[in-house]
Amino acid sequence: MTIAGESTRDARERIAAHLVGRGRELELTLAAVAAGRDLVLEGPPGTSKTTILQAITAEWGIPLVFVEGNADLTPAKLVGHHNPARVLREDYSADNFVEGPLVEAMRAGGFLYIEEFNRAPEDTLNTLLTAMADRSIAVPRVGTVTALPTFRVVASMNPYDSVGTTRLSTSMHDRLNRLAVDYQDEHAELGIVTLRTRAEGELGERLIADAVAVTRASRRHPDVRQGSSVRGAIDCTLVASELAGLRGIAAADAEEYPELVHDAMILSLSGRIHVDEAAETTPERVLREIWEDRFILEPRAAAPG
Ligand SMILES: Nc1ncnc2c1ncn2[C@@H]1O[C@H](COP(=O)(O)OP(=O)(O)OP(=O)(O)O)[C@@H](O)[C@H]1O
Ligand SMILES: [Mg+2]
Image 1 (cartoon, protein in one colour):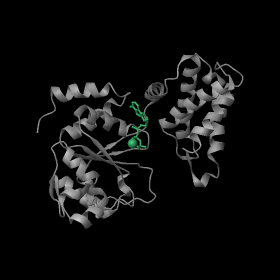
Image 2: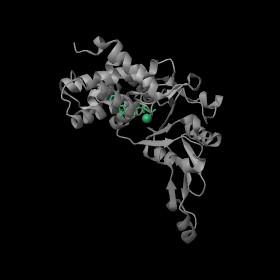
Image 3: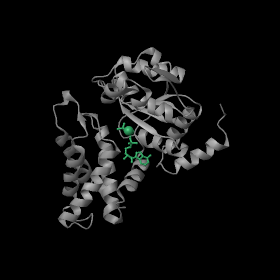
Image 4: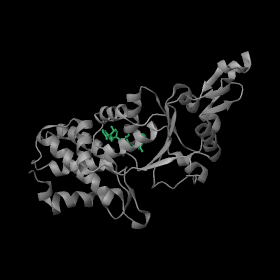
């Protein structure tokens, strides 16, 4: 155990260079994993969880092993299995064992990243508890698998998600640190969309600003249960840029510009917003309202400058 000192601080600076914003989330995540602890990142989709973990594991030079938590994630899938054809020929051996993500992460000293953790079945979570507590597991006909020191379990879950989820046991909660992650602020979203789309020029900048604004509005709309993440804004910008090319629109003050954004919004956002059932509306109608707010009711907000 080392106390986070110069080297962790230097690492933080290097990792931060790969991220737009998220300084606080990076610092807290890094503190947890550098302290040798496991943690759960709790937040809606598209809030930089994977991006932060990729940046940390790249800096540490270790693998980030993904596994999706769902009802099919049995303990055998998590741990691994023996290749049946080879077992028939050679009988069981450590040699014909096919590593599952848990064993892979333990042996390689990587982070096991379990997305939608709360969808995994109870017995799978129990297998994980053992690995977390002992840093080793007994695999039948293979032997004891001992984790390298950098092995961590990082889980993620979406707080809005309640369909098909298991309530995590108190013993699981008691073993995990928890970081609540929320949507990026507007400044960071503008930076992320700029970085990921490389849209530029006057038209590109306006598209980014409009895509971020309407995406953020989708999260505030009263009829929406869960709005779109920054991924929607990225796609909206990319789609709108292509459409502008197809339609020969070269500037944001073109008469056809608002309609261009509307079409891109429907394509990129309608499948990403989840409307409240009780509201009896549709994603298309919600998006139309958001668009009207920006381009008809408050055109000055959308105007340059
Ligand atoms: N801080 C950031 N810096 C740069 N790019 C980012 C940042 N956050 C998010 N992105 C970009 O936004 C997209 C979504 O981010 P990411 O995959 O990290 O979200 P997530 O929280 O893991 O979402 P999910 O819960 O759906 O897995 C990625 O394509 C990523 O490139
Ligand atoms: Mg992710």
